[in-house]
Image (cartoon, rainbow, N blue to C red; front, side, top):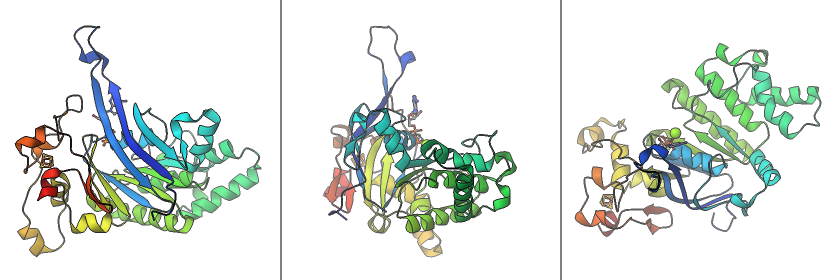
Length: 330
Ligand SMILES: Nc1ncnc2c1ncn2[C@@H]1O[C@H](COP(=O)(O)OP(=O)(O)O)[C@@H](O)[C@H]1O
Ligand code: SF4
Ligand SMILES: [Mg+2]
């Protein structure tokens, strides 16, 4: 993979939100909520990166930063060699054609007053205004067929649909411009378990067929296992572990990854019985006042005194990196 140019290159990206109500006097510095606090990764054409971490870890903020919906306060996001921060409106409009997004709540992300056909056609009308209405209809029908929507629903409205069907509409809309990357922000979290696998498999199939790259966000490691080439585990805005799926699931190393995995039931009853239960204790600390040093230390079963001092950097071999010097010294 490394001979190729990455599609997306993310370097030490930080996104902080000012908290105006968090100070007593106006001359005090505005407290900052550190939603994303130094994330780096590369994404290659055709590759899927899973991004996992419990709710509030900064996954959606990272996703929004990648498409410029929130501004990174520092760091660099490069798309096909172009720095996103340096693009003018026209340049950004062009990039957004190639990067589409699918959201968690399928119904809420679809305009309730538009028909399914119009919702799916909207990006096409925006980016290819020269198409005739017959051509648009044709493209809409094609993509509806690909995502498993029957042609006779084209004039229906989102509220007439189930969550799974709405998500198929969202996928069709994201795919109609044939983008290079789709950022899927917990696309199956709101769906019944029985429908989740269908939607994940559909995305995987479409990805292989169209050579798409995916960033697939979930709060559960089991959801991304079969779709991801690599997985990034996030905790409180920081990277805990980044590895190929194969290596991560065979040898989860960061105490946070281990805790996330032990929360997933194991289908093998023997392994399940022998599993050391190490569920996470306590709540996620506030990202306004994150713990010093390693942000995971307040909940880490392996924490030592030294963990309060320095923020751990990712260490290890290229296909498996862990931000924990204690484990690495292991
Ligand atoms: N626009 C915003 N203003 C202030 N804080 C925000 C904003 N968006 C997200 N946050 C905060 O940033 C943190 C990360 O949120 P988010 O990226 O949504 O996490 P996740 O998607 O992993 O659940 C949370 O503490 C959240 O409350
Ligand atoms: S650096 Fe310390 S607190 Fe952080 S994960 Fe490793 S052992 Fe736990
Ligand atoms: Mg989110």
